[in-house]
Each structure stands twice: as C-alpha cells, then as structure tokens.
Length: 390
Image (tube, rainbow, N blue to C red; front, top):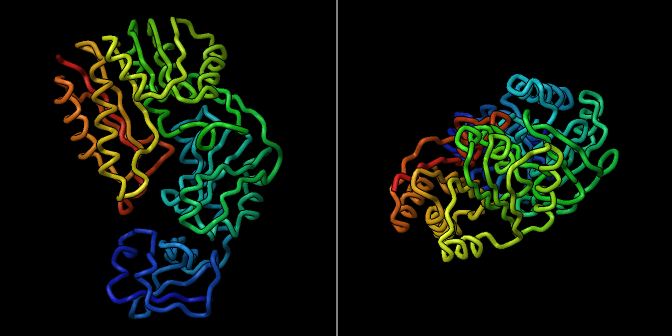
C-alpha cells in the first residue's frame, strides 16, 4: 500500500478529528501514488493515523477517509451512504428530497449527493471520489433505487482539485422532478438552474419565517425559485415581491406558486438586486419583511474585506426599506465570514441606516447539513432574523 509520512507535530489536527492533510504538512511520499489513490497516513513516529484519498494537484493533499486500514472500499462507501440517508430520514421521515450526503460532515470527503425523489445529483470535489464514481453510481442504483444520476459541479472547487469542470449524466436522463420540502412543492429542472437544483440548506429556515409573515408585505430578494416568498404566502402574507437577476428563476417562482395554489398579491421583478433596492429606497418604498439571501460574496480569504462591504451595503439598503416593527431576514453562505463578523456587519449597516435592531433568531444550515466540531469548514451558512425597533 502507498504510504505518506507527515512532518513532525503535523498530526495533531488529524488526531483531533480534522480530515484534511495539506501538502506542506507532508514529509515523505512512498511508492508514487496517483491522484485519487488511497494512501496510508503516518505521523513522524511511524504511527498509523488512517487512510485517505491522495491528490498531489491540490493544496488539500489527502482527504482522510478512515482512522483504520480500509480492506473493502465498496463496503465502507455503502455503509457511510446508508448511514447518511438514515440520519436524514430521522429528521425528514416524510420527505424524499434532501441533501443525502454532505461531504466531510458525513465522513465521505469531497462527495455531495442531493436526492430528488429517484434522481440523484452529485457534486464531487475529491480526486478519490472522482476515481470511484462508477462505484458510487453502482451503490445509488442498488441501494437507493436511483433512476437518474447526474453531476452539477461548482467549477471553482473543481479547479482547486485539478478536476475537469464538465458535468455528465451517469445514469438515466436529465429531466424534471416535483419535490416537497415537507410543506410546499417545487418543480426542479435539472437542465438549468443553480447549484444542484435547489437550496436544501435553507429548508428549515424557510419554515421559521412562516411565524412572522401573516398579513405582511414582503420582499424576497435573490429569490431563486422562491423558497422564502412561497412560505410567506403560505403563512398568509398579503403581498410578496420576488426579485432576481435571472428571468429563468422568476419563471420558476411563477410555476411554483401555481403548483401550490397559493393566493396573495404577487409581483415579479427581473433586476439586479442592489439596483432594485437602491431604486426602492429612492422611492421611499416600505415593506414589513425583507429577505436577502445572496450568493457567496467571499470565495476565499483574499476577498473577505470586499465581501464585508458588499454585505454591509446590501443590508443597509434592505434596512432602509423596512417599516418600524418589521423584520430583516438575512443570510450569508460565505464560509470565510464568521458568525461574529456577520452580526457585526449587520450592526454597522443598521447604524448607517439609522435603525435600531434586535436579533430574535439565529440559525445555520438545515438538519441535512451536519457539522464536524473539529472542522469549522463544515459550518458555513448564517441565517439571522432582526426586528426593526425604530
């Protein structure tokens, strides 16, 4: 078996439960492993730390898969995928759509699987998982009755791993699925759209906003397929305005409203969100609830300061549109922006908007996005609800 020995004192993080070995922590590589190979990992005293997938093309040189020697990779993958599925069914017994595997958090590093009924959409950010794609497909067919299996990768993370950015249909066809989030239905078109087709990480948070949406005038900015706004309508919102820069996403919102037979006044706007908010502020428009759920502004540490300015401006504009007694519902999916920094950014935005705010709820990603205590990288989503006091 191919073997990697770490430098002195570089094993502590791995022993404590972190799953990444970085290239600058390696002392010696034996037997010339290829990208995607399983390797044994040892500390400087030649004590076994476990096994993981090797990738010389990545800063993350090894993604740890087991603390022990692996004798049967197929069995390990099968058991881990089954365990991940059963965890989701514990929390969502009546749902057939959720994030079934969340990479390192489910001890399947570099593998994300979103389940849409019998369609499974994969994102792969590990050379080892890429090398075993046929095996993963086999397990999905045999153990989960998969009818369609496809990939929808994020190019940014594939580049970091030195992997091809192309997507493919591994089994079946690309079609549509109608899924339920436990309350509302959504039509998913896998031939287009963002991420794998749906943002499962906000599922639980969408249910929370039903508590404060009745009889309210609502703005759902960066609405995507309409998740927050639809739940507001379900809870009895009087008026919901959906805004997204993508005309395709706005058309999805309209379909999803029809699919659920939702009533209430609606407006659909294809517009850059920042420009729309500035226009609404200039027109002295007011809403009771404003949702802002933007894409990640900070992909890495280098862009964090710029991202903070973006979040501050976005939330300042949103706050200026909210009536006293209303609510700001705001999110960040930028891992590099920590909770304390995110709250601080909102506080600065409130100060500049001359608003007094009260934090009434904070949450992270839904139950299908578990976290590893020793890997802060597995925790990324911030979801906060603020009441505007004046």
